Image 1 (tube, rainbow, N blue to C red):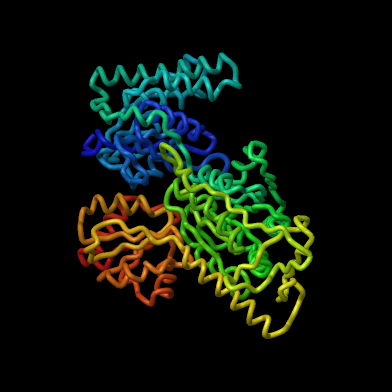
Image 2 (cartoon, rainbow, N blue to C red):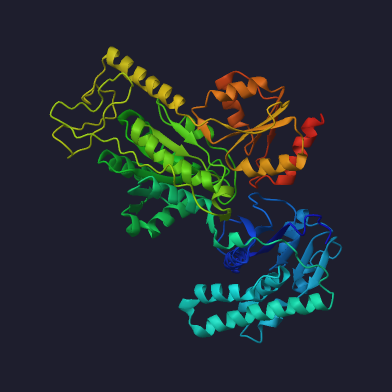
Length: 580
């Protein structure tokens, strides 16, 4: 195998049909390798179907922390005859394909290295081809010279409900795969072992995906009411919170539709709950009227909008960054909002936690925009940062003179909730006076709009500044947001130029004033996004009146790879206008 990074960083891909147990193998492999001392990163691409089709998981195993998807395949384990055709564009002469002959020879003239191991035949002695995936898993463990006893322990844990015989059969299957790979290495058929350096400190790390990180962030933010209707890629967030609802005193409601979801969440917020919604772009479209109601009634609400390609149903299990404008311009009229877009697992946790405090303090809807790539990717981390986890409640006990919408110098009215004090806590969808009574008085209307502008001014002051990476004496400035973070970071490391800076935005809106200073300094500004119109670049242009020079956009439903960003950036810098 000719990959020059083979002994430091290896990309292994498992590919087969839905229902073949790929996710089980993936989970066992990543946990086993992490416990063996390797850094791991994994991400999935899958079709919108319960069984059949072609799904794949890319797993990077490294001697250092890795956080991004690469096109490169060093080792491919095809588990169906559709796997190799599905991945042929990513397969090179340096790719080692291991598996059943009928799966690895689907494209006979494909330039790659092939080694036949009949996992199904080897599994017959145990009890049938149901164990073939575990045989393959054992072979991969030997390729990395990992301790197979770690896998034994995980197999015992995952299959404990199936009985001792099933556990023992799976352990036998892993041993057969391990021994088969051992014999191929000794006979020099499998010519290259993986020599990735291990780090014993990694063994105690946590493996967390984007879904879990957002759920944990909600818990850390004091969430006590969560409502959702299942819609990829956000369904897992609601189910994660449901699984832990009793542990953290959270009411979790899977409602009948998205209109019901937002109205229940607003009702809970009115009653004093720290309310949370998870949905996707199509589902959020049904919530627009409810968001407008949140703006008028000043009810705190945190909303996760998981992004997938649209319009309508679009591509339910694919990825994109298409929903900035949908969220930013949702609801009738003008009212302030805050929009976050996590670029990492750590961001997904901390921004969700932060969202709860902001919405409780400023009484505005706060949005979090992950995408399918982020929620379905995971890697090992040592810990989540708990240093700033303060839960701000910002509730007052009302008296008989209480006015829910009192005009104040700051624009923030004191918030009371029904039953906590003597005051009447009114809420109305119409324009209202300070008490909450309906009015069409133009003077009061003007004051309510001014109040919203005051809040927006405060939100601008606390906006997260963009993160700058690189040499301050840059000529080229790469601008991006969301899950592109680690993809671009690694691509820039490959590009190895000291005249390129990277400006990354975790907060989409309001835009921090520092953005202008970086943009005005750059000679060439390059926006990188996963949507067809460059939504964030346009937002920055509107906010700063500084235009982008180049846009690198992708909207296929598949994420950027590190290599793809590297190649496109290189073309821009070298003056090649044809970067499609």
